[in-house]
Image (cartoon, rainbow, N blue to C red; front, top):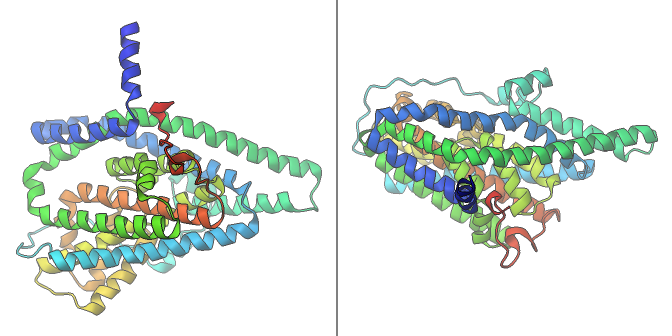
Length: 433
């Protein structure tokens, strides 16, 4: 028994990010080597995704209300404007980067569009997006996992609690009651973060199973024809993260080291790459923001849940890449005006996109319809979308953390002297506890 404990202790001494990264690579290799039988591991991966999904609504409720304790009504409006403004700008830049890289590489040229069914749904228009923000029944919205209306209700409720707390007209008993609610929310948030790391320990198994299943089903033959498309998206994602997130937001606006930023957010980035869900990664993203980046919950508890829903840099970038890819498949060249329309439509689509796997395919139907391109393209790329989606999701999470860091700096809500920012201070990981 002591030998088993020693082995477990040595295993735990390896940082979690490396264990998950190893599981990602080994799972991919097993899937390619074994083939279809590897899909039998899918349930183990589904459990991991469901465990993360289980945490989403409680994390949002606890952390948003916890943040309301330090977020005064006047400050809420200021931070909210900064967050939404930066998210809109980075999403627009993402589409531009995707279009620029695609115009240079020209993915899809020389390929022929084969028969494929587009399993698409009608993308929401602006009225539906706005109407969907306000829940008719907040409890029902929580039960159904509708994140945007849940965020809206919790923000409104937290704002009301903050107003009551600041009011001189309420009784001492009411004031104590508000303080008690905030204490309960803070205790709940801390408990949820502990659960997060328990789930992430299982994530080593979950990620292995997910990757083995994906590659076991797709195989090399299904991936190779789309190598240029995947390479284009990879280059665009790398360029956007390097120039916009690391160069613009982290270095220029935050005046911090991109290496420190990547070190602090690596758990969230690897998780996003593994499970391809911005919402599912949210618990890990929030933990990195608090423990590694030392950002105050008054900022990250607002910006990160909101970012998981409306900040879809990777999804917006993907629309630009696949728009050029689709045009090349049918022998059409997109003009400047048409490409500018892709920017506007993709940003709108990303705002209405849910942070769950496969959203990019549904949002793609809106862009293709706008350009008059065949929706069969959706079915054409669906086979490799699980791989493309991972890159998109990682870009989304990078943008969420970068914007949160900038807004935290602007509002004096981050400690750049500690965490990953402190000179010579290593990033905190669960395995180091």
